[in-house]
Image (cartoon, rainbow, N blue to C red; front, side, top):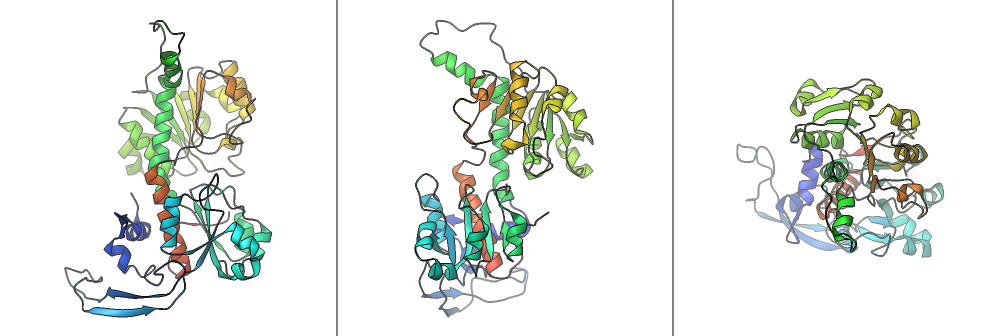
Amino acid sequence: MFRGRTYGLLKSLHLMDGQPSLAYKFHPAITSHVHPCQKRSVDYRQSYKTGPSSAGGRTLNAPLTKVMAEKELPGVLILDIGGTHGVLEDLVALLKKHFCLITMKEFLENKKEMGKKIQSIFVFECRPTIDQELLESLPNLKVIANSGVGVDHLDLRMISNFGVKVTNTPHAVADSTADIGMALMLASARRLVEGCQIAISPDTKYFAVDWLGVEVTRATLGIIGMGNIGYKVAQRAKAFEMKILYHNRNQRKKEEEQAVGAHYCEKMEDLLQQSDFVMLVVNLTPKTHKLIGKRELGLMKPTATLINISRGAVVDQDALVEALQNKIIMAAALDVTYPEPLPRDHPLLKLNNIIIAPHIGTATVQAIRMMAEEAIANMLAVLNGQPVPSEVFPR
């Protein structure tokens, strides 16, 4: 669920059956940009009417007013369209409604001319790489919109020194990432991946009766990082009657804790010692780099499972290998590693008490589209001098 200004902007971007919604058609941040890379006339209805039915907003029953929009769409730099690392075709169509798309290849072929047109950069799957040389080539750049919540691949201080804003998409990713956290917890607890391999193996003649997993219901879940995503995880875990512990920089409001039955642990060590499942939902920063190492793993129960849906470098992977090999903890379930993908000879890939997913926390049709919509809303807000829904500030 989107909140506040973000919700209003995203609602205005939502498309039904390929057609703009009325909110989209009349949103002030969008009507100034009417068609990709060209000028055209626009007809729309607009009036300001105060009353119970309109609540002071625009109404749709006003006389038709013809407005000439003679403004070229702002340029947005992307790595590529399609292919291995390029922006998905569906998202390209969405971006083209508001921007003139310029690929990195087109920019490099004509830096002087293209550099002047680019006012924003759409970062998709951590690409294109943002460095000082690129920023120096873009004199009119105003905003870098990251598709996704993590911005550890961006040098925020350097970018800020160029007077450029950075935005991310925390609202769009919360549900899908919380879902993958629950999926990994359930799959690991019930040994789902291993069970699938047994079921389809040509060597299987019978199913062993002593092949057992553990239950999630009424178990203790420790959530490290109780932001948007962590709280969504807690909401889901409540339905499993789980005891929920959490550790966060700041304690949540009492009513928020009560809504999900969560208990605050000021010390992370207390959470680690009590939890049957420990889920990592933090941003990667210098303070959270290798947050979970040999000492922390040693504090966990030998029957516990570590679940990571944040960033791979939050966990000391060498220490995790040792903990899994020596049964310090029972299992791990990771949506993220460092690097991604892991080298094919990495010891984590040889263990049978681990699940590794290919960083698919936000890999749903709905989430990818919502991230693009939120990124577009952020870019348009910056370019139109409006409050920015999801701005990221250097620390």
